[in-house]
Image (cartoon, rainbow, N blue to C red; front, side, top):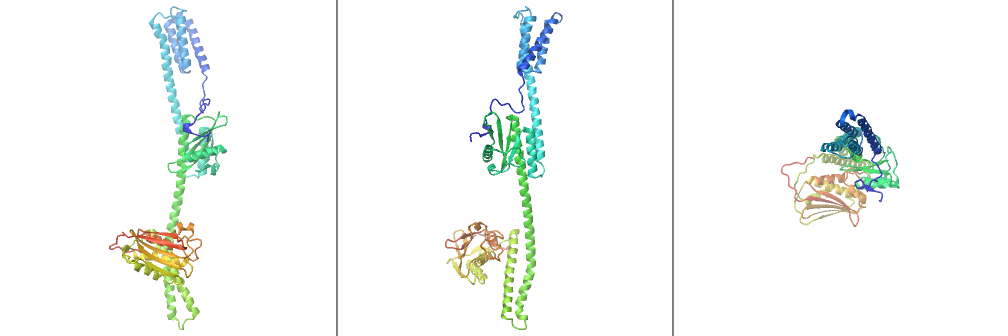
Length: 520
């Protein structure tokens, strides 16, 4: 990008004067200095017979001192030179000759130049200190006004309006703001006072990507055109701010502009963090309320579930006449729906307990063969229409784990396979060990898991697009929670030959608990 250069390397044309500074007319100062010395010489010449040579020399010295207060170094030195020449030629003997007969006369004339130079240095230093003081005060005032405008919890649009107005007043420039890491894909903020050209957008994009300020000039290279600065903090890049200037900034103004950019970036970053904090707070509160409500409702539902279960079981005993086939079918459907509801409530309670951290596994040596057979037995009704294969390694050691948690996890995986695969398809469960882990696998021959759903299947309430109706999306979340509570992990994948496979890894180095109980 030929027209782009970082600010540290920018080349400013020599013909341009710093913004806010004006060159004083030195020619006029020379004329004033010459005129004052001529007037003083005329007065001394008229009064020389009354006041003497030394008094005239002092009057010249006073004139030089007074001139030094109002004119620059060159005119002051010119006044000292004219005073020395006039005093030597018209007042010091021999008169009308450029000749010094006494050493004191030479010292007197030299004193003019010494006094002129010393006074100019003192006055220039004093003026420089005064200018520096005014610049510091102006900088502090500008930063105070900016920070005051950025304070509070106003919306971003209102903050940017204050920023742009303050910068226009301070730098006498047009301002453009883009709140995006990629300026090419976003337009300027509505409060901006000038639109970005195609060239400006390229420069702004370069600034955003590299995190450095950039400068561009007009086509005739005679006018400073625009300056772009990144709005960034140590954690994020928030966008770019651009200034369209009429003059080159002084070093003081450039330093102030950098301070403005840092304060603006910090304010915008703080505003973003506040918004994120508020969202996180509301989400956490919403999650807490939902968990509390779910836990409360689940406990309350357990009572009518038990009543329904007992009532349907007693229908066969309290009836005076045997139930007809249709009545028996209705009772069976009620019992089946009641069992399904009971499992759903149980899953909801387990999930709330897992998330609350109140579930503590009881690690004891367990027989893996018993674990697998118990899980298969628990799901025999659900897997009645499937071909179930159990593959166990010939010599499985006792493994330290929580038998109840692991059995529930394995049961959920088998139920999941029964629900998501067609009837008469194969479902297999296997167990083996390697050097570090117990490996339990549940595989099916169903349609598998969509590729975009693989990273999400263990999320709470997540259901794949091809999932059958009726599920809640809690089963796999519970599997993940039960296994991770024991220091293991579970992985979902698709088989090459078709279907899905879920693999549980439990560490073999789990230490058995002595007297701890499972808080379920």
